[in-house]
Image (cartoon, rainbow, N blue to C red):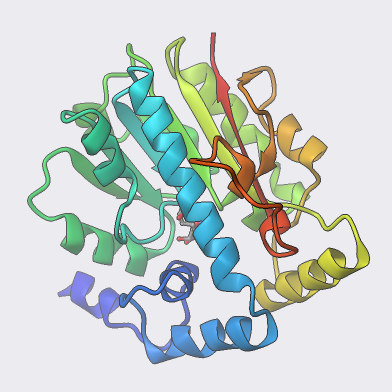
Length: 263
Ligand SMILES: C[S@@+](CC[C@H](N)C(=O)[O-])C[C@H]1O[C@@H](n2cnc3c(N)ncnc32)[C@H](O)[C@@H]1O
């Protein structure tokens, strides 16, 4: 009953559902679409940013699984819309297991409903700033063998943390908690490098009211002592593209990503 009440709470917008709307999904309510439409009307490249982010995530999860890592912890997972981490991972590695973590209760309830019956996924409601809580959760420990490498995913989420919330800290702590051979993926809003991109950045930041866009150097620093893998931190559309990518548009320059290894 409580879960249903949360799921049906249509009074407040949710980042996860707005993002789903921008991706063309149907797991959203009028209150989410109202904000999503502000993005689309004022910032017509928003869906392109969301798509570039999602496509890079799909390639990164495939690359991690192809390197033999078949267990994932996806922090700030949002809604498991089409081709999410577990589907991609299981395509590359049939026994792949995925823990989804989000602090938005409505995203968690909806995710659990969508993933019901899939015994290789677990959805946890938690703040990613509390790695110990997630690492120690009995459901997480039942699914993930922390003596073996893990793919730790921070996709489109660390930019929601202000500097005072120390966004590098959960990455550093997870790097201590997982086995050598683990992989870390981060995608992140990237500070504009010219007037046009800076104007877009200011509008987006004002719409969300929190978080911080960062430069490639600041995003690379979030990986701490981990070994950054090729091609480093680059716009998502240029991260290990399939085929020859075009020059990133103004919008596509605003979302960047990288993959690192714990040796
Ligand atoms: C833009 S969505 C990204 C979804 C997905 N990771 C992707 O890249 O496709 C950001 C998600 O992070 C979640 N989030 C934001 N801050 C968080 C925090 N401190 N702890 C856990 N989740 C958080 C939001 O609720 C939202 O679902």
